[in-house]
Each structure stands twice: as structure tokens, then as C-alpha cells.
Image (spheres, rainbow, N blue to C red):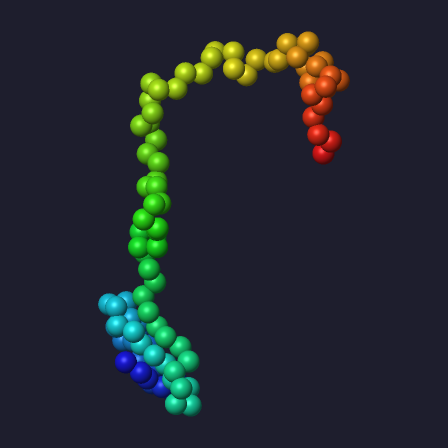
Amino acid sequence: MTVTITEASTQLAQLLEKAASGEEIYISREGASTIRLTPVATPEAERPENFLPPRIPGLGKGQVWIAPDFDAPMPDDWLNEFYSGEITPCEP
């Protein structure tokens, strides 16, 4: 369906309903179509076929083990080697 800018401004609500239902609406200026109203694709429709679905919390329950001291400070000899040994961190 093609309408002029004047028609589009007076019938905007009806044109939006038609576009939302899937009909393409063209708005013309000086006889040439310049704008096309189409419905916005839903995020599901925009996903590529190889896109992974959203993660669901709790599916890996019981499959991961974290040591009770995982956040304990590193031993001093490791820290000394890290900061003054051959494995020196990059300068910021």
C-alpha cells in the first residue's frame, strides 16, 4: 500500500496497525516512495540458526567443585616469583 505524507499523517494509527499485521506501507513524497513501514522483527526471529538459547541458571548444579580456599592469598614464594622473577606482569 502506498500513501502520501499527508495521508500518512492523518491515518497514522491505522497505518501502524496494518504494518504491525505484516502489510508493508510505503509513504511517498513527490510521487516517489521514500519510507517503508514494516513490523520490527522479534529477537527470536533475528537469531541465527546456530545461536545458543539463553542459559538457564542451575542446570550445572553438582557438576562444578570449588575448593574452599580458592580465594586464599597466594604463597609468598609464588608472589615473589610473579613480581620479580621471569614471569613479570605487563606494565599497565
